[in-house]
Length: 385
Image: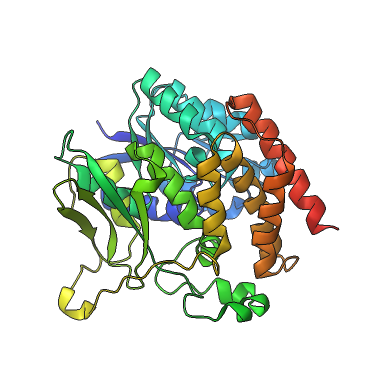
């Protein structure tokens, strides 16, 4: 029996590469469902290639367009809207849900998938950033495994396989440093979205590429690692590693360090999440350490990259503060991509939003939803001031 996979966000960077993995191993995996937010044309093309049981377009305004594009495939059910996303992940045949949606929108369908006892391949880091305590509690309650897809968290996970209960002394979370690693701070005020989208090593979607440029992405990954691996933020050290060869590492109490190395190719962690504990063949380039020449490591500049510092502050405060930071970041990230906000203003607005949105020390799901809405309102108001 082929393993049935639902891909939330199939038209994004992670989703399209996951489909490449499934195509390469079509004897093992089958696509049950594909979803997208707006990219109707690509979603329809993917459906024609992979013949899923269903497709979902989150933007209900695009339903008729998708339905028309799928008219020649009457066996494929076509749905639209946020509720359809929540419903489809509960479908009986699904074995695993790959959550590759971007942002807060991934939280609700992930919760529904967990409650339906579907294994989770987690690429939507915002789910744990916003509601890590809730997600871990639900995963325990419903006996659901959460397998990380982020390259860094996959590397940590791979380094921990076979270590059983050996305590973690420190997690070494690597970062490329983004396109502005060597740029003087005073020049950041004039950088453009085109500058920020030129990532030196990874090919990613626009939102995560901007988050990488501000290093907010790395701050979110620290929060994600705290929940995934049961460590304190003080046990997570961020290392700027421009070559992106060591994807992350774990230091144990005896001083030993285990790391996972490889070329910057997201298909590897995607495939490992789908196939764990097996390692399957994967086409493409392999790591050549002779060609790598050197491996460098630097401390991140928290004054220059204030978003990373704000993420650490959100971890320190806990409660709904990471939810506030995530919502404000989604607003300013989009504003920067639309030329409505400068690069330094992103951190300014996030910091101000953290001060203005009510803090809750013990949030539940409803509080997360309310917090997200209020933080977005506050951040938008400052953009429009």
